[in-house]
Structure formats: C-alpha cells, structure tokens
Image 1 (cartoon, protein in one colour):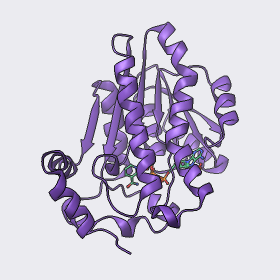
Image 2: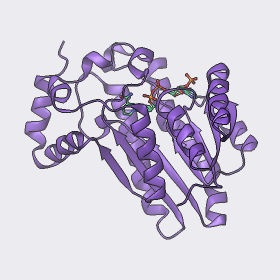
Image 3: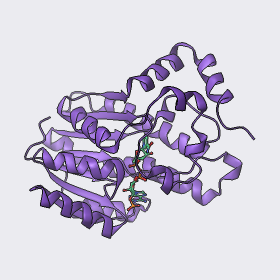
Image 4: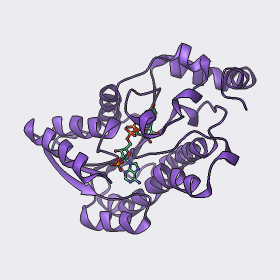
Length: 260
Ligand SMILES: NC(=O)c1ccc[n+]([C@@H]2O[C@H](COP(=O)([O-])OP(=O)(O)OC[C@H]3O[C@@H](n4cnc5c(N)ncnc54)[C@H](OP(=O)(O)O)[C@@H]3O)[C@@H](O)[C@H]2O)c1
C-alpha cells in the first residue's frame, strides 16, 4: 500500500519505535495520528513532524483502559494504516509479578491491539482496504526464562496477528508483523530489570537496532505488503534454529539466561 495521502494511526508514538515510525510515515506524505499517555511528549513529536513539513495530530489515551480505546476510536476516523506498537512490561518470573502488573503488561500491547483493531475493522471491511501492523518482540519467537507475563502477552499478540491474517484474506485488508531484535530505545529504562534478562547467547549473537531502523522496516512492511519481518538477520537465524532445533535452542536460552 502506498502511504502518501493516507492516514496512519500509531500507538505508543510519544517516544521510541512509535515516535520514529510516526515521523517516517509523515515523511512519506501520510497524515499521522500519534497516541500515547504523555501529552507533553506527544506534542514534542507533533512539533518535530510539523517542523519538517509533515502533518500530525496528537491523541492522549491510556490504552490499558477499554473506555479510552472506544473514545479514541470515536475521535479518530478509521485510518488507512493502524500500527499497534504501544507496549510495556518488566521481565519477571510469574511468582515475582503482582497481579496488577500482569494485567497491565497484558493490556498493552495485547488487549490494546485486540480492542483497537476491533474498533476499526468493520469500517476497513466496508471500505475494502486497510493495513494493520503489529510490532512484536523476539520472545514471541524464541522464549527466554524469567519473563512470563511479558512473553505471554507477545505470544498472544502473535496469535492475534495470525488469526487476523487468515480472517482478512481476500478482503483488501493486510496484516504485517514486524519483529525487531533488541532496540536502542528507552524501553529498558522504562521497564527496569528487563535488559539483564536477555540470555547471553542472544546478546553475543544479535546486534541492537535503532528505533529509526525499526521505523524504516515498519513503513517498508506496509509499502511492500510484507506479512512478517524479523530482523536483523542474526535474529532470523536464531528463530530458524528455534524451529529446527527447539531443544538445543531452548537449552541455550535457558543455560545463558536468568536462573533463581
Ligand atoms: N526496545 C526493544 O528492544 C524492543 C524490541 C522488540 C519489540 N519491542 C516492542 O516494541 C514496542 C515499542 O517499544 P519501544 O522500544 O519503543 O518502547 P518505549 O520507548 O518504552 O515506548 C513505549 C511506548 O508505548 C507507550 N505506552 C505504554 N503504555 C501505554 C498505555 N497504557 N497507553 C498508551 N500508550 C502506552 C509509551 O507512551 P506513554 O508512556 O507516553 O504512554 C511509549 O510511547 C513495545 O511493544 C516493545 O515491547 C521493543
């Protein structure tokens, strides 16, 4: 899908991957709706886009709240492209995670993507066009120890993507899943304790990518209508190894990962 002249809604656009994706879509001539909780950071991103000649609108919403998702969908007409990117979650053993925190890290990204996509789906179907991008984590492909709530939510997001892809076949609505390796955003500052849990094998093999690189791949996924994109190639190799040699890859992740 060509994005010039289209509308794009990006969740989690106040910083990191989402902010860069919004900037890139605007640079390609789309009008971008940026969504997150922090009004101040959103305004900064809108200013950055408009100073570069782009077109953007900020929408403050807490996507962990179903009522706010409905209100957002009422305020923003059905976009041509929906990027479900907002996400949180510390990496913890299940019995170390308080129930409220488990609910929060399941609500965003998984329930937010599920509910927001549902809000727009009927109108996309009626129009016979649309594109949905779900930004997912490497742990949705290769599980690691000590990360139960975060990891389960990302597997649920993977399941949502696969389900939608089948249901939307032939409707004119496409679905992409973009899965970067470790990204040099503020994620690990915003979710302390997670970075230390990346297994040694993954740290050694898979280089970090920048939020700007991820943004470029998100835009390319829409423009080239790609179903799934894992990168960098070292992550793809790890994922293939996980499929071909699940026991060995699982053992490596466990052996070089977090133990109690
Ligand atoms: N960083 C990585 O290594 C990496 C790798 C692969 C995939 N990912 C995934 O990519 C996504 C974006 O990550 P990032 O690295 O850009 O993280 P980030 O820098 O921490 O940004 C997270 C974004 O999500 C928004 N957000 C969080 N909770 C929200 C809520 N309840 N309602 C609305 N917006 C909310 C945040 O905005 P506010 O705080 O203003 O609401 C922020 O804009 C996440 O789902 C993450 O799991 C990250």
